[in-house]
Image (cartoon, helix red, strand yellow):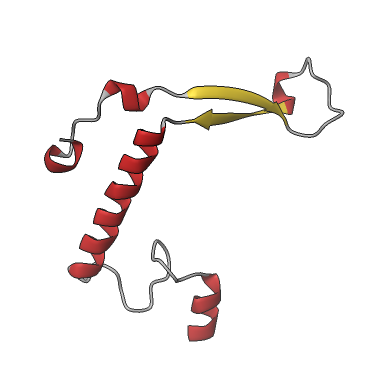
Length: 86
């Protein structure tokens, strides 16, 4: 339903488990700025995200939305391919 309608994402897909991890061992554990937050999404949410990403990429490539020399947001293209083209 999410893929056909494009606006509905089940609420169970939006639940996230946030875990604070100490950036570097040995830092003061009482300081909040010494932590980075890691969010873990449910498996189905990540699967939906990947399916939507693949559809967007295939549609973008199908309608020639990207310029021939554009490397951003394209699979198998990187800053190295841009440098080689230049």
